[in-house]
Length: 131
Image 1 (cartoon, rainbow, N blue to C red):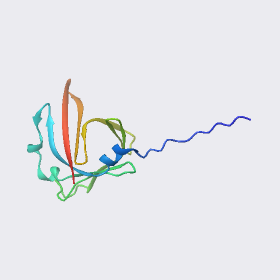
Image 2 (image 1 turned 45 degrees about the vertical axis):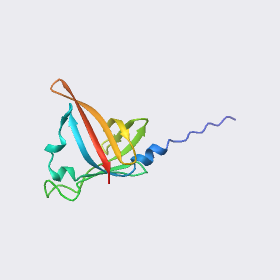
Image 3 (image 1 turned 180 degrees about the vertical axis):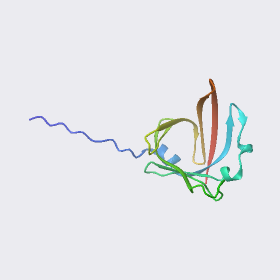
Image 4 (image 1 turned 90 degrees about the vertical axis):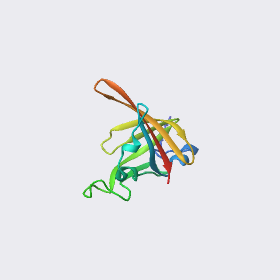
């Protein structure tokens, strides 16, 4: 008799990189194609919190000030995973977004992403600081 066993992969991020990311972060810098975007953002946006838990859950919280009082406190939720320098979000509708991390320390998270708009590629760099 021959028996095969299959174990599902645990979706919970693991390893030391998980611990560097599993914190509460706040956006502190943002550029698009090298141009400052952060200084143009309203305080109701810059006080938002980005919460990563060790069990792979992500929450974008409005922070202390909402831009519109009727907005929900929780902007979005997702599961997150980390493979090398790629941060991947899987949203409840099963859509997926992946970002390239350039810097990940105990206090700083910096990543880039590229979007295509009007036939042009737009490169954005976001920097977050731990709270």
